[in-house]
Length: 443
Image: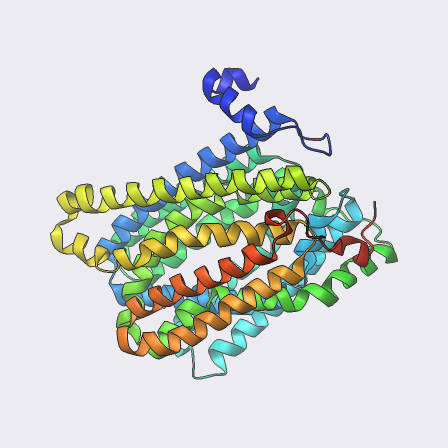
């Protein structure tokens, strides 16, 4: 089947890289197919994203990108309440069972409503986010869509249904681009970005629930299932909350330390470098997570997979940066003018080191999360956040967005050094803590 879909030499090369998993459930062909399907979908979506970003940065002012980034930031902060460690619990489960899936879905949707209440209070009861009140319904919709499609997304990932997931992602990206083109011509402000994002989330919600409808079916949930997720919640809630907070730190710091102009310029660049992150990390992170989880009891295979996915992520980052630079400087300059191109590229050199280092750090994050080592993931997130806050406090008031990018690069590099010291995969004779046994994960 695979030989009909891909060139023989390319398939043979990938077959030499991805070997039979210890669980026996995914062979080399299955892993190759997973990489090809999901990566191809990611490449397609990022090309679409690049086209949309080029159009929106031309039609929509920079300050509206700042408002959009602030809206996504407040969503990320409120989504802290939606994560009590249940995602890691479902990912680390050796054998998926319907009671576990159903409880994860109910908990995620219920906590999504809690996040909506937190969002409402932050926008309507405080003076900090007055500029977001006009876009309240869009932000609530994004929270609810993500909360309800999160469970089928994890289940499809665990079952290696990456081909079907690739189709869903491609459809969602196409809907986003179509909405972006049509709406940004009519509404040349932040509403175009928010409507397009809602259409994308709605498409992903429909597709994933159609792909994994089992989470909608009622089933009896034993007390042991509740106890399993409670054990994860006790340990992973702090880690997940700190991680959510750290992912919003850049916009939060720039919003209050530099002002709307610097935030708008950074947010436009963030749309561009987000393509690099998606192509390098998001294109393979779910496949990497499934592999790490399957190989967590086999140190040699796990160590080899860590190196292989590191190469894939770095290759994706370099390819994305090269393609984006060529597209913006050569094609974009010809189509949209030198002023538009220079406006996007004024922060570009400051972002390149960060774009190259971040995939390496995230590869370790995925490894720690998928192999039952949330302590190391928590330490990584805390270290990165503390480094970023300290450096940003020194650099952002003086250098604005350039200072933030410098702080991001330095804090990511420092965290990566710590992760390399903590990882047993880089130190084969160091004993790795079997965290799953402490949690009582069922066999």
